[in-house]
Length: 510
Ligand code: AHR
Image (cartoon, rainbow, N blue to C red; front, side, top):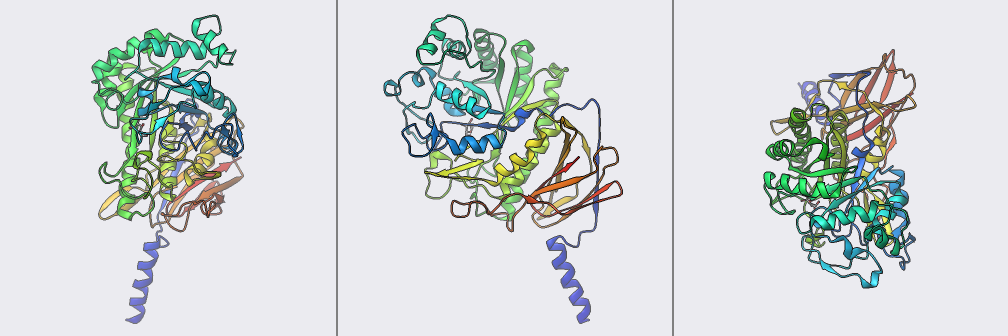
């Protein structure tokens, strides 16, 4: 009797920790010739004049003791270059539709100030402007993605911005640029026409905005990648209306914003969260699959050749601001939950590479799901940074579609797919497989047939932590970092992988 009880007790402990799980998920990787390339711009970032993203984040000014290049922190440039940051969206977000770019050029001491009405009502001194941003993008090796002001700006103002940044010949705007110290145009390719036009960008209807879009796009001119302000999560009518009203030759991309928020009135703490809250965050994150699928299907109706990109130019986890911080600054810590969220979302984008060709995590530094946090001269990278770095191998690689039936993550009678995966082959022939186990308790086993993969030697990297709530702090900056992954065996053409709870793994095969 005692023995039987002991057996039951041990089995229960083992199943809670996941060790007892025996089932193995078979995952097939297709080496399909006509699969799309994963556009590197899926790995884009977002710099908004919000809280300490620009000031104290990217930019400290050239008189700062913090090592900088023309005011931009050198440590941040180094960290983002290591991430292979492909593009950077600026200056917002909601801020973009209050921003008048001419306030941010010329001698800094003469620049007018404005009040940042959306983010804390702080005074914006415009010391970080067009030259500062575009020169910074050159330092980073990232394509700039400028978000134009439709809400409170004018068509002329945006057309002038295009000429100021892009025109090589002689014109009033290119002369002004030269007077301000820049001879060669920057040739900015990516232009957002307004932001969240349904909300902070002007509370417009989709019909009204379509008309505005065409007007702005016309005077900005052709030859640019013009991106329309897109839907709020599942507002499919927005995408339908835009696609119906705007000719394809005027449309480079249609945006989509989706944040993983449990409840807009009660978002929950960034660090001190329960498994219930974690499960809800994951549910919101995985909703991206449905959103991307359904918005793409609408786009397919009007654009069967997939000329227009779906641009998810704001995504990420959004929690309550850190206690004691300015509520208007949206500063939050970044835990292992965020690493898992990032890995699962990026797998969704990779697998939809035919239509999703650009995305921007919100926001790069000190705001929402940041990859970098700063505290005066100190700088740390977050678990999300590590996932972006591990996944950078997928940039511009050919997608290898994956087929599998995920085991379930069960919590309180609800279920979610526990495993997410994507794979690609880079230009050197190396195979990369990224796997995420979102289950908070269970280890999962995956078996991959590697016979068709032209790869014999496999190595792996993993990021996980003792607790989901763990994070990197300024006192302990390397608490969560990627390590060598040993949880797999390559047996007779089969990779047997054991993936622990809440972990992200990237396997390389050469
Ligand atoms: O990322 C914070 C804000 O969220 C952005 O400024 C806005 O576009 C969105 O509503």
